[in-house]
Structures are given as structure tokens and as C-alpha cells.
Length: 150
Image (cartoon, rainbow, N blue to C red):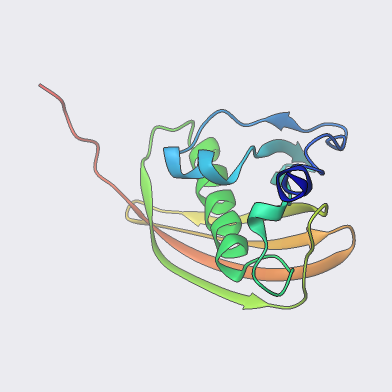
């Protein structure tokens, strides 16, 4: 029982002002969330409160989890920037781990879109815990052709 309580001890912490629940994303993203979104200074920001389920065996945020947040943030920002009219998939994602995050931390992914072309889109983001940068990522996304259903 104690373990179950500790797994959810951070879910009741307040979400920072300006963030709203993000209802888009794949079923996989639903497994890691909830995730939140806001626009700040014209840039998309994705946020998540880290929970016990996001930690590795050493008690810090799992690297795969942080990469998932970065990839999700980049994809969501690109989708929002095109009103969802240009479907994209990750073609390349490069990440650098800079520092650790812990259960209870509020992680924000600050996304910067460099270019959305006819075939490729380019964006980068920094994962932040307060003013500490914990991960930087750069992504290339393939712009998919619209498929007609019929």
C-alpha cells in the first residue's frame, strides 16, 4: 500500500498558471501523461509533472521518458503550427542529456520551430526544470502526403 501512495503523491500538486490539459496525442502519450500546453512569447510549451512511474531504478527521470517528452512536444508544436493539416512523423531525433530530474518536478519543453517545408520540418526544444536545462533535442520530421479515404 505504501508504494501505491508514493506513486501518486505528486499528482495533486498544482499545474503552473497558463497551462491547459492537452487532449491530443496518441494512446501512447496518454500512458505518460497527463501533459499540458500553453503558448508563451509565441512559442509552444509542453509541461508534465513527473511521477514515480517516470523514474528509473536510480530514482531519477528515465532517459527514455525525457526523450518521449521532447519528441511529443516537438510533434505537438508542429501539428499546432499547421492546424493539424500537415501530418508529420519523426524522421530523426537527436538528444543530449544535461542534468537530472526527479519525481515531483514540473518539466517544461520549450519548442522552437525553425522551418516547415514541403517534405521536411525542423524544430528543437529544451526540457527545463525551473531555470535548469535537463535535455536539449533537435528533430527532423517528415511531412506526410494527405491520404484520401474512400
